[in-house]
Length: 383
Length: 133
Image (cartoon, rainbow over all chains, first blue to last red; front, top):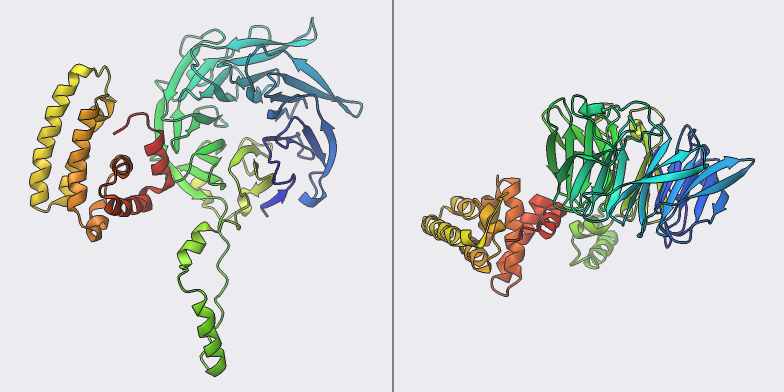
């Protein structure tokens, strides 16, 4: 059963969350400088226990990522720093990373091979950090040009050498993140056949009509999607020649976070507080349906027809004069799992196709969704 | 999208708008409202790219001429089958029209009808688009 849990008070809200490799522990930040780690997460949600409260950061933590293989957590915050946390002897040890940015960090992501991580920052650049053994510390290299404004999100290609960024200058860009020191040979991924570019060189850029809030790669690495603030989802398919872009305009409010379920379906969470499914039917991408469905209306009570009961019903109905049924239904969102915009989404199952995912929002709730048990058109999603 | 639009192009676009006004007026008199609205909203790129308030208000006048001619009960019929991109453009004009006190009553009805079809996403697009009508 998909369910939601008020894990921190509604007045706090959750900025980011991440799971460990076997989903028994959850790291999140309640919209402040604390990194909280819960354990016992394989049990029902009410039995999750808070194990650690780590307060190395000075300002609000904006991004958390937990690598499934190395087990390290990277966090970044508005205090322009990032910490890499390693667990040993029952304690989490922070290691400060000097990002060399003058403005806040917005988001951070481990590369799939766990050897690098990238930070989206308000300094119009993306520090890509790798570990230098000789000095035992993390070194940052910058991807700067041609970002004209804050970088809002980053996404690593499965080969850990290409990185896509979304910025508030209305563009999504694709860069080379090939670092000589850590990577073996340059793998061009979906761009095979083109000239390899060196670190921080841009391959492509795509425009939208609003801030690019979220970007994600498909499990195969052949499709890139980004969501912008003009209520659109752009899907770029790499197929050998020039990449093909499709823009999906949808009827509801903009997306804040997206995740590919499979190569032909995407989940989007946004200001409608309800994860939305987009699917590629073979003839193009389109919005499919929302995940959270309103439970069936309860049967209306029997209408009384005799004597006193009918008279009472008549007077009770008079109290409802002027209220229309549709207005109430439209404004009543209490059946939804989230009551405020969904800002963060993570895949729970370790396979490349997503079957379970979790969402957090600024209402302080975390919801876990199991796709197989949900009332969705699974065939269209490629599951 | 129009590349390299300059102020010198404004005069040519104004002439286009005049021509459009002519064909739209004749369609309105013949009560061909679907044709009139489609024609009024056709080829918006140059008007969107222009920075001249004269060009924009001239084109807006053509669009509002059609909107004023259509009775409230006929709005549904006119909007049926309208292209989604044209619907977004129409929403921009509705908001432009709501910025002045004339026709507020019928424009609010238009807003509700267009909203049924394009949803809050259409409103978001009309507000975030840098190219204004």
